[in-house]
Length: 180
Image (cartoon, rainbow, N blue to C red):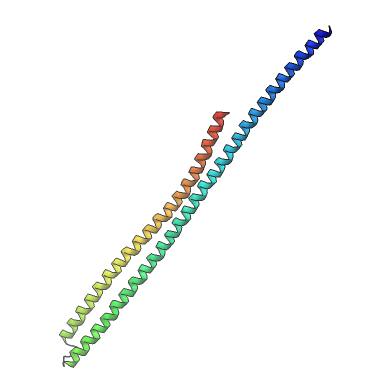
């Protein structure tokens, strides 16, 4: 009977050892899977934050470019005004020089010749001013449109960053779900 009890206890001991080993192996596997899942979640989170940060940085740079374009449009407008003022200054100088030349040659300043010369100078100046203003308007409008496109591109970049980050998180969740 002692042999029977001894054998019984040995069998129970072997079974307990085997069960303990199985529990240890399962716990170890569970821990490894948990660690792997935790690492995957952490790296995916960091990657998502990186995507958002890069998109925000690029969007800020695009907005800065848009502001610069708006400033250049304003500078173009001011330069156009300065050109128009220069044309007007030259017109005044030309009309004055013509008046002096006509008067020194004894031509009556109220005569038709003087009026025709003044009208020709006025017409030429107005054409130059109109052309300059049209060119300035086109340049300024082009810059403003570019600024608008840069603002839109900045918004799209931010939205793309958010969707990219969400896609990374969703992909990681699917992989974790498949793994179980």
